Length: 319
Image (cartoon, rainbow, N blue to C red; front, top):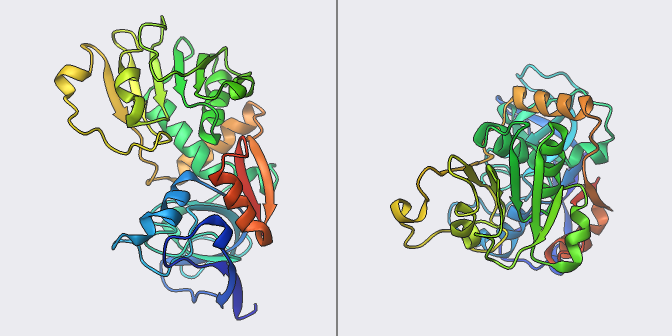
């Protein structure tokens, strides 16, 4: 193994066009951690937030290699249960914030956030799964307890997470209503039963919604709470609207009687959840929604296209 690797290093707010690949030492393995040869990784909105602003926060361990997920093979299993060559995915748990992440040829990762997978999907397809499908899976089945008889509203459906949620919900037989605030993207929601242009106010225009996945976030959450029927559940998972908190939120007055509010935080994946997701994808013959694939050498262009919303679906970077 060579002594150095290619990686992206951030120390301050960095526009996409200024992102550069540099040579850094390959991390040294230590007990409880494993070295993964990264094959592919997906890009995520939270990485954009880190790169443009959050990098300034004291809790970010700078300089940092960003990236909250990856797919690859175990190169050095250290003292873990893994074997060299195991096919794995890794995500969250401080990846790309508390310790170096996936924008690199190798990633040194805590063994408890690395998961063995068995799948016929390609490396490109695998890269679209970990964070996106885990978040969709947890939101729909752990938080919303989605059932076949439900009518699901997905607010902000034209993101990678939205597409994944549509796939999972339709696979179990749900009726799905999905929204976008851009008229030219309505056709991208063709897999939903109904596509709606989101004007910011949907309350009073929908009937029969029993579950809602809020991906726009606090910007429209108050309205989404009024879109579901009595007994309905709203899961706030995304922050696409750029509003991160509800100032002055009064839960007594603003959560309608008999409506339930929950949220999904994807920081705690498990081996079982990864196995369940990949098994579900195989059983229902679901192909992850990959929007575009870039080489690692083109990482700046990939990030720029993400920042400018030029890609519909998951952006995957191939090492």
